[in-house]
Length: 140
Image 1: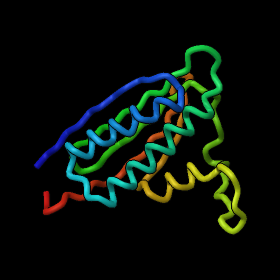
Image 2: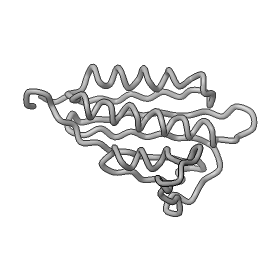
Image 3: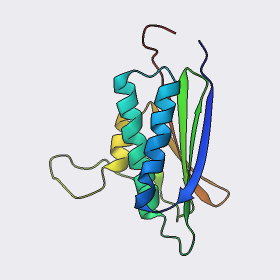
Image 4: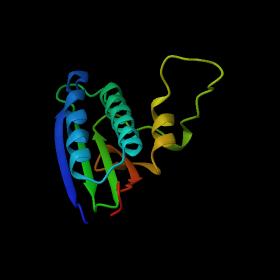
């Protein structure tokens, strides 16, 4: 069965708004054929990506985050967009897991749980795109 989905929401870059992204993921999981493990991976990736976007947006005045969840029922594409300064995605190093540190694990965790992760500057904004293949419980 095909389960198309398009959800999009823009909210202010405030950690108090993390619940907005969590609710969007909950709604997505209720609509799409997502098994528990895949759902947990998506929860973690969205939480880390939105948290990073909020904390690193550094924009003065009204800074906002846009979260988009797009699916054809077979894969989920997640885009997190913010207006902060860009960063060199390719230069982000894998953290040394033998030397604990505070912070610096977000992008590493996202790459571990998602099938693909990419970053681009689009119209002056940062856009982190993540993809995850969906597995239907009990078949498609």
